[in-house]
Length: 184
Ligand SMILES: Cc1cc2nc3c(=O)[nH]c(=O)nc-3n(C[C@H](O)[C@H](O)[C@H](O)COP(=O)(O)O)c2cc1C
Image (cartoon, rainbow, N blue to C red; front, side):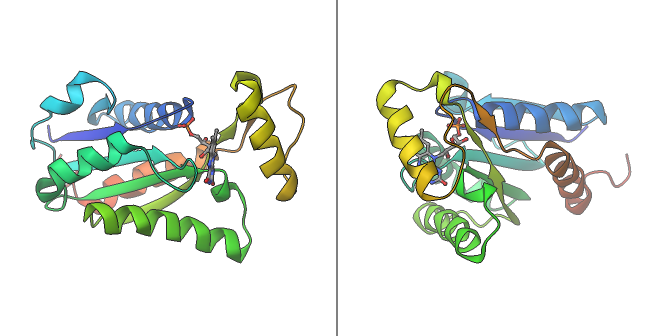
């Protein structure tokens, strides 16, 4: 069976939940999927054996994780030779106004320009605001940002904005578009 790779970078954990959800969704459908945390030693030993790849990372201070960027730069040639998708997780992706959509596109494009990745799909994915897991400084900073954007400011609880059913739909559409299911 043709193997897929889902490789992710996470800082607070939401992108791990997202990548795991997509992997499990595809595995339930009988697809063979390797799920790799790009901060783990496994990332250095990945071979170009995959028929399709989903990359996922989150935005902090306007940039995706360095481990994601470095992995893509090291493996760009074979990544660009197979069907790929980039999931760009952020809080901006939770907002639906035109400026926020443009900001998501710009953040993803910056990553693509920097790495030379040419994915077939770029999907902005709304992340989370886990206030109770932040240290006091992050909590203070994120609450100020949320207040400015009219977002959630109750720091006594966590907020999750990820649309899981849209993510499941994306996973199946992506596999369908790759043609991996042909002849199964
Ligand atoms: C310190 C910090 C900086 C952030 N900067 C941005 C940002 O520039 N733009 C944005 O849309 N979201 C930003 N976020 C929100 C994260 O992208 C969001 O919480 C995401 O779910 C984090 O994913 P992770 O848990 O996989 O790291 C920031 C979050 C933190 C804690």
